[in-house]
Length: 466
Ligand SMILES: Cc1cc2nc3c(=O)[nH]c(=O)nc-3n(C[C@H](O)[C@H](O)[C@H](O)COP(=O)(O)OP(=O)(O)OC[C@H]3O[C@@H](n4cnc5c(N)ncnc54)[C@H](O)[C@@H]3O)c2cc1C
Image 1: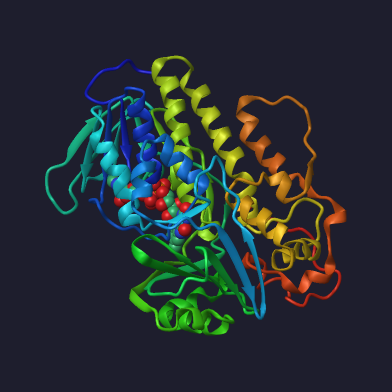
Image 2: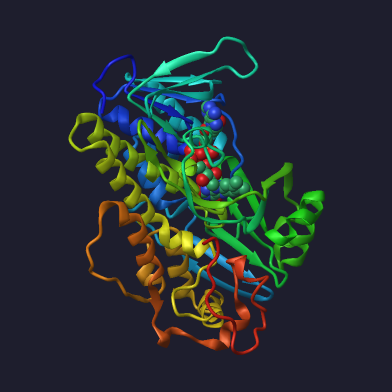
């Protein structure tokens, strides 16, 4: 790496989850950071905001858990799943004593990270700054060019590394032409609304409602007494839904047993927002002088509520890798390749799950029967939601044995190896119970392909995006 020179060691583009965590991780190690964002804070972004306990653990390590807790959002300790007149409930597993789940609106949450960054003596935060171009020296990225949107006068800033933490439509990733792999087209369209005055059902609960037509809803309490209702539609319905999404949401609510009653008397706060262009992808997250964190490097449908935690964790891991490279403790390529492999290994099981990939050698019918237990078996629902929270290891969710080769690999092969390993999880045959096949619930991706009252001998395993 080039020696320390100029005002900044790192420029981080994007100051929310991925960028905030990267900047704070670098600042904690004494590096000088320019943190840029096109937005001004506090401000909202298109996202609901379920925070699993690993996200709260990350906030703790970044020094903001106290402020996050002071917001006063309830700790959500239970999940309740409803399908027709059937319901099931389980406690949400947690790690290290953190609240199992919380919901804090992004206007509040992101500002906590940005304020923390502003307080760091080695971090300069510049808001309203749009990065439009990259500076290069030979093949390496050495800085950014940009300025205020709509204003004249472009500014150039230089640093030893430029981090793109600028979301799924990342400008940095586009400018460096970061290669994408394992791309899966959008699976769902998700919209959300806020309410006030929803009656609690006892202890704070993540309520999930499903119907036979494939859409489903989450309802959960959050900060400021505000409840979020998220509604996901199969992607095939997006064209219809977007013509009048408020009406489509109302119809989805009406089809869910009990949901209209839960919302009766509650006050709706503003219009719904949502998106249907939620492509799933990995991007190669580094090259000469640049690296990617958060959604800029890896994106999956938000159905599992993992984006915030994954972005925080990738930002933390990237800061540690950059520190090794900047200090000369490891070669740039070695430090960043390890970051890449670690990122993919961490997120791969839930990526495959989100992208509708049953474990190896399983028929869809068997997989459907397995998932159907979420509605009938409280312990299984606990393992299921624990898997989303990354508290229950993938092996325990799949009741798996792993079929991994012991062959040695080169560093360049490692990301591929971790992908193969995650896909080689297999269910123990004894765990199947086909009597529940008609209750394939909650993860909606299967619903428009797998008949709810499935005929025997369902289809085999199918991969997409290859
Ligand atoms: C409908 C929906 C619901 C979701 N629900 C959840 C949920 O419940 N739980 C969860 O964990 N995740 C959820 N997610 C995912 C979550 O929002 C993302 O994974 C997360 O925000 C990623 O954080 P990030 O910091 O990588 O990127 P972002 O939050 O997208 O931040 C990127 C930042 O980069 C800035 N930027 C972009 N381009 C430039 C530029 N050229 N110059 C300067 N700045 C730039 C933007 O202004 C922005 O502030 C949801 C997403 C959607 C769409």
